[in-house]
Structures are given as C-alpha cells and as structure tokens.
Image (cartoon, rainbow, N blue to C red; front, side, top):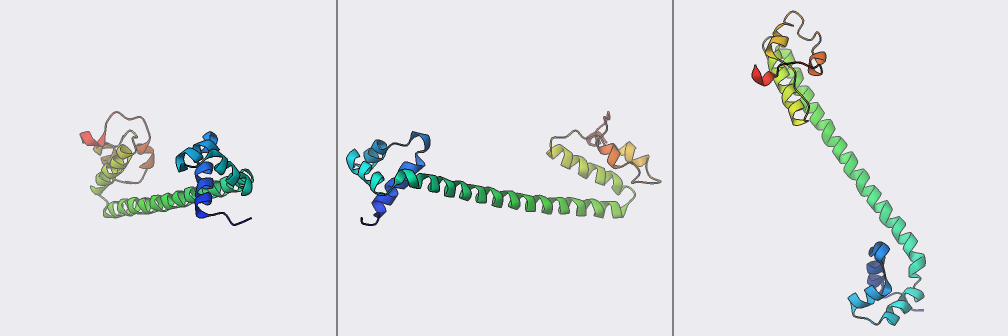
Length: 150
C-alpha cells in the first residue's frame, strides 16, 4: 500500500473535523470526488481507527491551550494585584488625609468589579487616631453612604 497522499490526509482531517455530523459522502461532495473513492481511502488508511487518536490529540492540544491561557491570566491578575497593593501602600504611607484617597481608590476598584462601595469620608476621619483600625471591615459592611458622595 502506498503512503497516504496530502489530498487523502486532508480528506481525513476534513472528515474528522466534522464531528458528530461527519460523513464520507459529505467529504466526497466537498472535494468533488466519487463517494466510492473517499470510502476506499477511509478503508485503506484506517480512518475509523485513526479517529480516536486524532480526537485525543485534539483534546490534548485544547487542554494545553486552555492551561496556557489560564496561567497567563493568573500572571496578569498577580501583576494587577501587585499594582493595586503598591498604590494602596503608597497612599497609606502618606497617612493623614490620604486615607480618604485610599478609600476612594478601593471603592473605584470595587465599582469596577461590580461590588457596592461603602467607605465615606466620615468613616475614615473617625479613625484618625488609628487609621488602619477596622479599615477592611469598612469595605464590606452594609453602609448608607458612598465615597462618591463625600
């Protein structure tokens, strides 16, 4: 038996990519070949047996691509987190009135994430003696006012 030609290999791939709706007659029609020719190719080159290996390889490539996309997204999120934390640290290091800036910055992040914002200028000013006391708790309670109003 001669090796599979590029045309025959392309026909196999076309057939395999058809998924549940695959059919030799469809391949023959698309290639302008007689159905008996495509049937002979599929029998000679074991298309049915090769299909399982082809599908496994396809799934492995899809999985590898998804893993790469996932890890890339995780790296992007780590960089974003670092940027956010760096900005928060810089604001916190300035202290004083900048605590309100920190609250506004965090509220902007929450708004972008679609979460309700709850920090007000008054809640930050009340903590002047110890600006970090309860700061995180202020980002998640049910509060009446929004920083945008301050």
